[in-house]
Amino acid sequence: MKLAPLIEELRKFPSKFTPILVHTGQHYDYELSEVFFHDLSLPEPDLYLGIGSGSHSEQTGKVLIEFERVVLNKHPDIIIVVGDVNSTLGCSIVGSKLMIPIAHIEAGLRSFDRSMPEEINRVVTDVLSDFLFTTEEAGNKNLLREGIPKSKIHFVGDIIVDSLSRTIKISRGSHIIDELGLKPNDYAILTIHRPSNVDIKDNLSHIVDAIKEIATRIKVVFPIHPRTQKNIDKFNISLDIKNLILTQPLGYLDFLHLEKHAKFVLTDSGGVQVETTVLNIPCLTLRDNIEKLATIEIGTNLLVGNNKSKIINEALKILAGKVKSGKIPPLWDGHTAERIVNVLTCLA
Image (cartoon, rainbow, N blue to C red; front, side):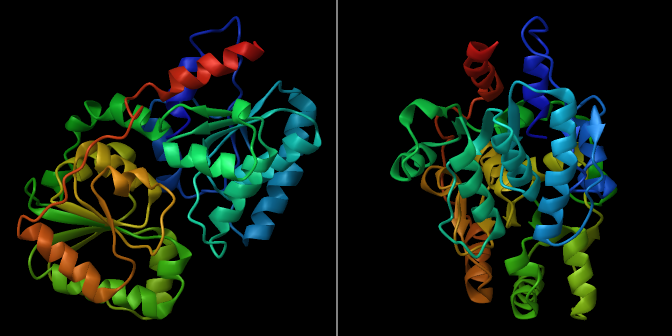
């Protein structure tokens, strides 16, 4: 979903750019992958590596092997990576060792928590990158503090907002609210998938217990990530909760429509934090730290961790009308892809 607007923009200049879209297959479930290609009208990937599941080391190692073959065959002039997943790290290492420039979209974000695998991926990728495209001022400051030359840093805004801007009107065609028997502004949404929340029984139990209390006041829609479902089954945690509506992972258009009309959202997703800020929807982030500071400092986001009491108290405040006001951060205007392409044009 982050690459859709960039691919579209690059293809406006066929004499300068020939983008090759590589799908590593790290997110291999249909609902977490192919459905986004459909909803965002992306063409099929030029190459699919089929990495699949595994530990962080296994996934990164497979990416190193498979992506190196791609690079040696295609001889790209630049490699563009996005975010903080294992594929981002693996592709960056390959490009760096083969002396091919790396461009990192969402550079400079820091949670300052090295226990998070994503934080390791971000830091290493930024060190290896030649073009660092940042989403917010905090990212610029982080990179400068870490010794990254200012000439490599390009403040372009958040490309998630580009996808949001392009699809918000299309999402009006979704019937998900009716299909789930809901009414606008009369439900909350829960999304959780991060290891710190779903891999530890006590943490997952605390969140579910909080939702059980919140669901006595408002319906809660819970699209369950495969990792979360696996651990709910493993830990024998009951989701037999009145007013909790369980669904499979949703496509982008359905989720966006649901998100736009929610009373509030509980999540541990960085992308959802951005979307709720732009949509002016209250967001309670189930984490103790955060890399997208703008969503808290400027937007509608609040950190509540997996503390049962704090989750419940903040949710009840929202239901009582005590909602944090927010604004849209600078350059979150839907034109990030254009700014990235303008920078890359100097290579063409």
